[in-house]
Length: 118
Image 1: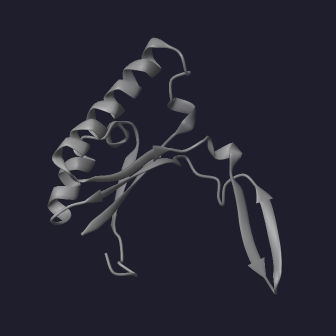
Image 2: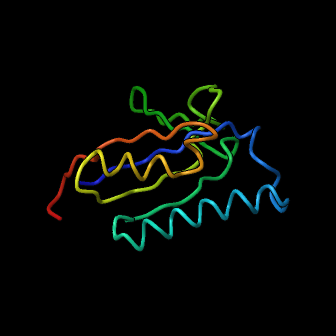
């Protein structure tokens, strides 16, 4: 079963890129991602650009409406994702607990509904 791990963090609490704190954080992410790959559960993983780079699209009455920025003002923003193929929710949760975002913010673990044959 596939599980999407949504990594929620407060962007304001993230270390400045290029600093030792940022390098330490990136190393922690790379280590857990590499462990997932070696275990054969990693399907895909990526960080997202800051929420200020988002464009929100809505279609209302046949008209496409675009808004710069996120859908809502939140304390924690969606900062990245990891897609895993795990035997069950317990295995997905064990991996989610190892992601640095779990200690800095939150990791939302959601089963993916298969919509096409695998």
